[in-house]
Structure formats: structure tokens, C-alpha cells
Amino acid sequence: MSRIRAAFHDPDGTRYGIPTFWWKGAPAGYAARRQLRVAGLRPGGQPVAAQILWRGVGGNRVAYLYRVELALPKRTATPAQMRAITAALTARRTCRVCGVVRPYCIPRSLGECVDCAYPMEEAA
Picture: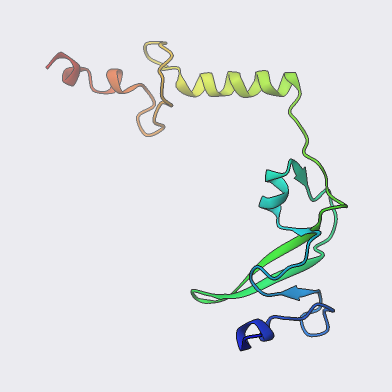
């Protein structure tokens, strides 16, 4: 075991307070938030079970791990929530001036679609 790995190897949590492993050194059964998300799971309110420490730019970096068997399935949006999201995204693409639904989100800095904001450039 290299010195860097040995510095971050604390499986019983005596040095860092919780079980600590080196980069790519965590045993099976632990996963980070992104890994849980890919698997269709979420932490579900469980506390951090372990951590991974590694040396990165600017100092030591940390990634918190959760127990996979305690993770819950991801929540899905209800049909009403999906309708609300669709309506909000459509509102972001609708020009206030001409009322046309554009294929892009209207820039907040302009407050209107590009065609309404720069009408002379379209004629050229």
C-alpha cells in the first residue's frame, strides 16, 4: 500500500470519525450520490456512512458515501408536476412582444425574442 493510500485508509473511523477509504478503494455496498442516481436510487435521509479522501488541486478532496441497501427509489414527478414543468418551459420560450413560441429560451437580458429585439438585422 502506498503512503498516500495509507494516509486515507481508516476503515473503522478512528482517525476521521467515519470510515474513510482512498480513491477507488471503497468496498462494495457503498455508493456516492451520483452513483445512486444512476442506479435509480436516492439516499432517502440516511446519514453519511463513509467517505473517500484523495489529494486534489487545492488540498484534500472528499466524496461522501451512502449504504446502497438503505437507499430508496427515486421519486418520480406526478402528472400535475409534469404539466407545470411543461407550462413553465413553454413560458420561457414564448416572446412577450410577438407571442411566438420560439425553439430556444428567450434571453432574460432582452425580455423578448431575438427577432423582436433586433428587427433591422432580419431585414438585411
